[in-house]
Length: 327
Image (cartoon, rainbow, N blue to C red):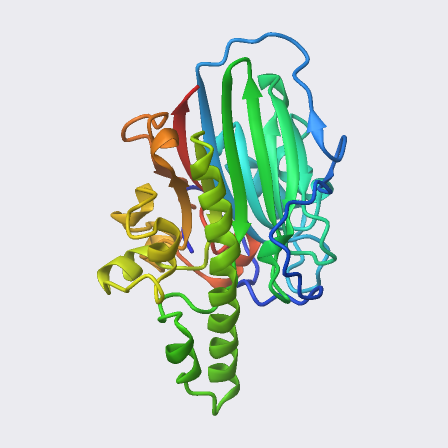
């Protein structure tokens, strides 16, 4: 994907995952790894917070994996962008753990990460100085086999509360129809075709647990946001007018029953000069959360320089996106 500001050198593109077993339960398990405690983070003192900047950033293989080794200059560049992003809450994808996140964002955040045994973990960083009460849980139902868990975070201060689900869905099925008949009819005569078909099968299976989480939150009548790397071009789901059984956007939006919205639906990505113009990173609001959205606050932090594999590996093939919320 894509973003705004400085660059460096190296080689990269996200590739597929390899991890744990199939888990069919749709329950939450409060077993997230964090740099402090593995569950709740209480507010320590009163503070006046009038707004929150919420972001999501896939930092492509940020960890110990040999696929993308970064040097000190690379981390300095990433830290420079993190400072420019200046977000209060950040959904992170493809980050191995809090130690690697801290190399980019520093010690000013609480970090919550999934516990799945794989370097491409999903996490959430929350600025410590906000003094929010934080409840975290790992949403393992999204792991339908060799894919990533989600992180479910509730932020509370006084009578104000916001629920967030950070996700990184299966890559490789960006705009194909997801109904069983269409997926079964996909060609599978080459390795590339087999990988794409497998990606669509897994993404199709992730629709149900994602929809279940959204439906449960909607029934609670409390504001929520789902954000992260969906690996899905929602603008194409909408442009192709997929029915609910074929599109990812359509099934989570329930034919507009949930009235979900994302600023990425009607705008094009400028990351890496618009190399990928359709967003696959999204910040999806329910109607109550949308009331918190500060008009025209959506932003994309774009890296400086022209696209190259070296530069996208040193930084990321995704640029961070962010919104401002009234709090």
